[in-house]
Image (cartoon, rainbow, N blue to C red; front, side, top):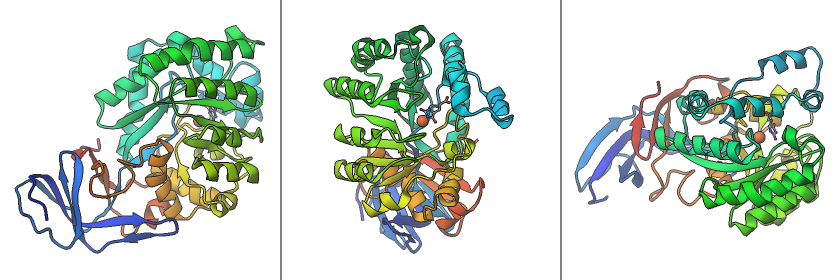
Length: 407
Ligand code: DI6
Ligand code: FE
């Protein structure tokens, strides 16, 4: 019971709660929201002491935390449909990248786009994410690869968060690929990243974290370490694209720096999993990229389970390897392709996704005191969220306790 004025009461709702092994559904109950936060949660009807401004009867629908997409490259211009065709004709992702396509082709288009165009193209994807229940999204730079274009991308990401009812966390991914003007000089580009781009992004408050692509077609562990040291010097947490196409021992390196997450992880080994467990680094699984690249090397899920590494699931929304904004579809793919349980997958887009962004104190679960980011679903059980392939089961989405139309 609460005496504070309630802004919104959602009654007749079945609240989903997950532990690490399964999800349970509470008997029909209610959630009270005040000041954008969850003020009370309970079973049955609320015993209201104060005023209630607004009220919704959910008709027994399922309520989950708002979904969190903790790994996207949402801000970019253009598309790579032609490369999709080339891959269908037999070219590999690596060979296209080596021939000057791949990430660098999106870099060209992103550099050429003015801020308004970049905002408009990215907004279209953001709106699609929101229609699928996403209330918080992480957005990486990494298609600018110059001081000006990286800052432009981060500014667009920040303006998207200001303009739309969704939380945006930004990540500087200047070490995503080698820009053409630094061809053959990767260490010089890393100098540029650590001496100019990262300090400037930090000074302007445009980056909440720093990421790198540690891979044979990206940057070496030694170069990644330099980026991490610069991030640490500027007080920014790190994340890493690690072990996607080969084992570079990037996850262990990330863990050494107390990384929030190591992402992809198809080639993770046991030492990497142990290091992640010790550091509390979340494993972010990206089944959309695995699917789109027709990868067959499944991330070592049992190893992650055995060592108690928290697993998150994200879209990896990007034009080259995962052109999707459908986070609920990723639940199905995580279960079908990686054999996650539906409960693990749901945790992966709620509690563990919050942890991958360092936001677990305020987001990711339905608890008193947390931010009232919530989704109501037209399904009868939590497993149905992962079971239905790309279904539109979302009934309502609340950001900071306010319901926003889905269209
Ligand atoms: N790994 C990926 O899957 C994306 N970036 C990365 O480091 C791919 C980005 C692209 O191809 O545009
Ligand atoms: Fe990625």
